[in-house]
Amino acid sequence: MIKRQGTILIVDDNRNILTTVRMLLEPIFDNITTIATPNSIPAKLREEHPDVVLLDMNFSSGINSGNEGLYWLREIKSLSPKTEVVLFTAYADIQLAVTGIKEGAADFIVKPFDNEKMIRTLVEARDKNNGANNPVDNSANKNGGKGSGKTSQGAMYWGDSEVMNNLRNIVEKVAATDANILITGENGTGKEVLANEIHRLSTRCGKKMLPVDMGAITETLFESELFGHVKGAFTDAKTDKPGKFELANGSTIFLDEIGNLSYGLQAKLLTALQRRSIVRVGGSTQIPIDVRLVCATNRNLQQMVSDGEFREDLLYRINTIHLELPALRQRKADIVPLANRFLHQYADLYNKVSIRFSEEAEKKLTSLPWYGNIRELQHAVEKAVILADGGIITAEDIDGGNPTRKEKPLEEVQTLDEMESRMIEKTIKECEGNLSVVAARLGISRQTLYNKIKRYGL
Image 1 (cartoon, helix red, strand yellow):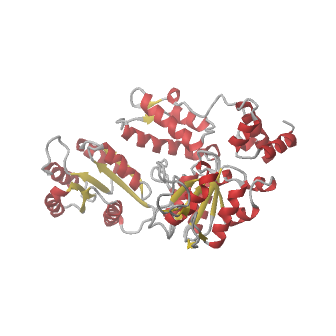
Image 2: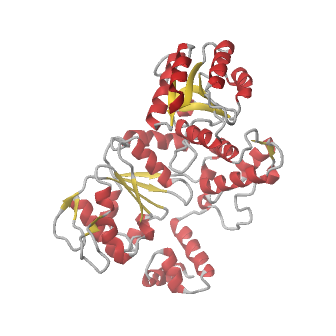
Image 3: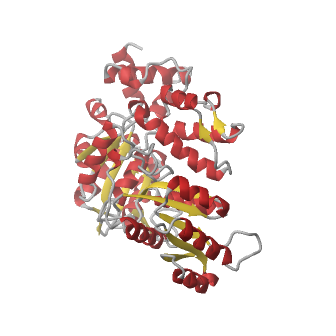
């Protein structure tokens, strides 16, 4: 769905609902405010000038008449006549919600709510207020990053940096196609989140994307997990079982950590992709598969091809479109807006709704290298929200960026060889020289490890 300009005020005393609805609406609207008590409504109307208010009908404990919602509906329409109000009601209060519509509410949404119904109703209310179809280009968003993406797992934050705007332009062009996509980037940059966004924008979004962690599948279970098995195929095969490719039929399959797949298993995966069909373990029937393939890795597959560790024909098959996610330190303009989005999320969760970053804290956020990328930033913000005294998060409350790390950041490494050499040397130290453990951790054979040690003079 196209992102739209608009300010939404959500009023509900259930903080879990506030967090859930905020996360649902963040891809759609560029400014979302949540409050847990209706007494704050007049101030928010003056400060935020919301286009739409999503208003719960009951707030006082033990009182479920819905009259509170009607009272605040009248107050909102009196204080801000142009603001549209959508009532949030339990099934038993539908008649009161109808009364609310007669008194000026734009519509009502019944709890438990349907996500699509929620989005559609609020978009229609917003369009009634401001005129329909007012999409917003994320690069033009100037409200400190609010609403320019999502923040939770499975949710995309694009930001305003040039590198991310360029990436977004490519994604919007390729998402609607069935082209195979390879996503690369450091750990914590959001590769699975990007895969989810590609799926959301695709023609296959009616079905859920199926993620598969290739690094977690053992060699002995690979075919059973991906291609399925028939009853009696092996000792524990009590029934027929479809594999991941069958389960993802008609949708998107996301193969994460594709670089960890052994050379032998790469051939089996390639065969399935070339034939567009699979055979269950123990079976003989070719089962057609219709999937959109998205893969991800933090490894250099081209270098692995050169080293004989990854099949070149498989790389060509999965790499129709290559998307590189930048490290967070390479998109510094997005750090504070992204941190603020995490701040809103955890402020709601931990009941610290008025908390904010000090100016010094924001400067520190930008100055830290964030080697763990978005994942590390998210954890640092959550910790700061929990431990902060009062309503201000200071620079001292920010703990992140691994400031004691002495290795050069990756963008300062001059060559891929230097990067790989550094990683092998670091892993050898961590494993106390046990090369079998080193090879297993790096996902390569002992012979390949020996060759690399000799090559780099380690």
